[in-house]
Image 1 (tube, rainbow, N blue to C red):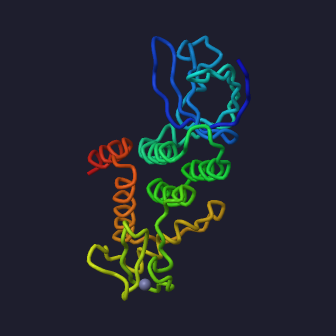
Image 2 (spheres, protein in one colour):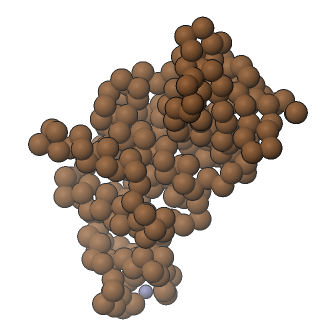
Image 3 (cartoon, rainbow, N blue to C red):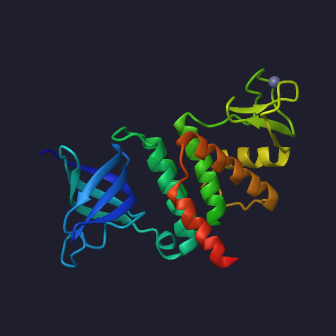
Length: 247
Ligand SMILES: [Zn+2]
């Protein structure tokens, strides 16, 4: 069986058998991988402690017919806030689930890996709700499924201010092209979405977000994701439970 090394982030973990874990990894070199970490829940296992959600690892794996096996690891980075703060964890799980849903198995997507690493790093210091929203809009850019927000998808005219958006048509429509199934999209929300898509994670300057615009940008995203994935994301239930506890 061939061995290989790769740099990866843990996007999903579930316990398996008495002492094992099944992992969904996203690796810089190979994209999404399913792997088993045998015995890692035993305290004396050399893998104990490392196979945690969101961990950034250097891994040595053995290729298997159905599933690869983790042999060794070195911890690259442990995201403290993502693993200790429940709200951050909930929003981080949303980004992880989304990445996992969009990523085809074993297809290298180094740009997605870099983007995801930036998003997880941002979770350590930034507002988790806005980080997740910006992260999701940015990850959609790589999927080829992003809606268009700057030009009318029918006539190509540049959009200024308010518009309406048609998910079936793939984006915004100008006043001349818009029809009934078009959802109204206020200029402020459109600008917020464009800002989030182009947000540079290394630029730490804060920006203002109006609550109503944030809610609408979230609503649009979730409605669109539900449409393309054909199911609600599991992590949303976790986010909603936390919101219910807080309210
Ligand atoms: Zn138009």
